Length: 307
Image (cartoon, rainbow, N blue to C red; front, side):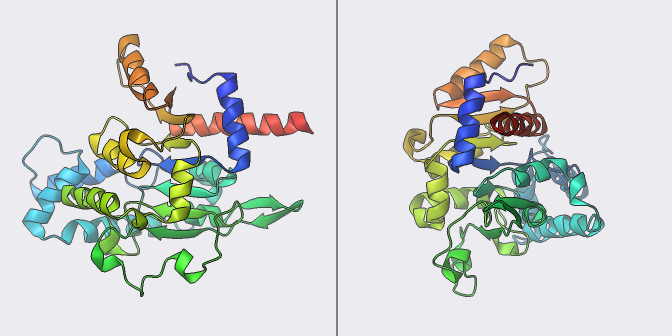
């Protein structure tokens, strides 16, 4: 399957990447092969909880059922436990084995927006370096989450920007924003259908819940939508909430990395490209791993040709 990106598209993307005006928006499709996927967690909960419907892969819907059956805090507690257990199981592994996350951490992004709740990206960033004044220095990421619930807006949960008013995300000190919460703060986790609706309403009513630095990143340059289910109405509604009515804040040149649906013909692929083309989003047909590998190779090739 061709990438659907021309050489001019790649050159423009690389130029924006080096200028710091390109932001990855990471979804559940970006993983290391060890962290459980939302669909896997949903299927496990559906099995143990006796979920009666057929969409056993839909985590938000299964979580809503489990919250009704076992209490409102059950999904957040169980998700946090599942992610914590995974971290403990692979704590001793080398970061070099986490190819996708390492590639993301080696590229000079200043801000990362993710719907993942685990801290694997932050830990990977801490193990990488970047160039400053001709020397290699360690990357020192900072992280935070969306305060979509009233109880999360507390002075006891200071943001990195509260702690350091002069902080500006940079290649050396990138910012990782967990839109669906951080596992270390269980009430912040967005799991059930009600949680997703509350997040949408909160960010629409109170735009300040998204840090200004993240707002500038989302609206100041193209997005790389990696592992995001663009056909899912919930994500499209959230993207619209963040980028303004009719996606008006979404910059031209944004790229969505999408695996072609099994058995899809040219008509289906053409429809998808046309639909997202109206939003100024170009579709790259492939996996996040394939895209990041090609991006890295093209960047390395450009750097060598300039030497």
